[in-house]
Picture 1: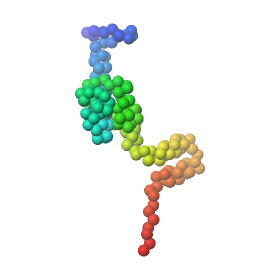
Picture 2: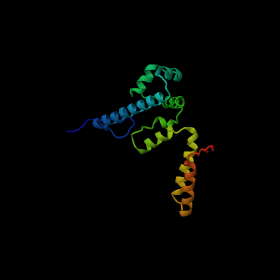
Picture 3: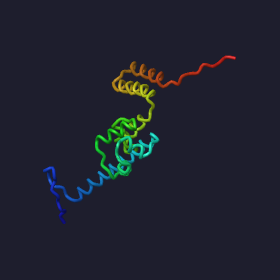
Picture 4: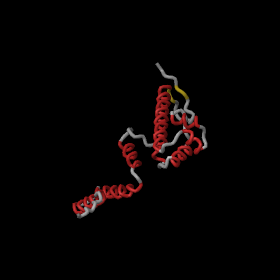
Length: 158
């Protein structure tokens, strides 16, 4: 049994129907994941769809359908979502549960800005440790201890 081949509009080789169906399924799954992510980010900002639609100058149904995975949002609209939700553009395309990189990026997004500098310092130390000798490792451990130490409270004497 031969499968019917469909000409590729880009001029490449033709695509058979099962390959095309698989491509559409992947696209639909991506759009659903993207919609779920946009909804999660909107809810994290305690915003309702009508307010988002107003601020982005689109219809409420467009927001609803985008979050439902039925619309293909433009890149400029995704950038607008990122600005509105106060996240990096990459955070729009971060899907927690889809792998360690996605999970780590989501955890980093949740860190308050004040603690972000501490985290950046810790990451730099970890990068330096990749090629460190023993003395450098000891110094790095001391730096980590300082960065992660909780402030001690002075006891009042009675």
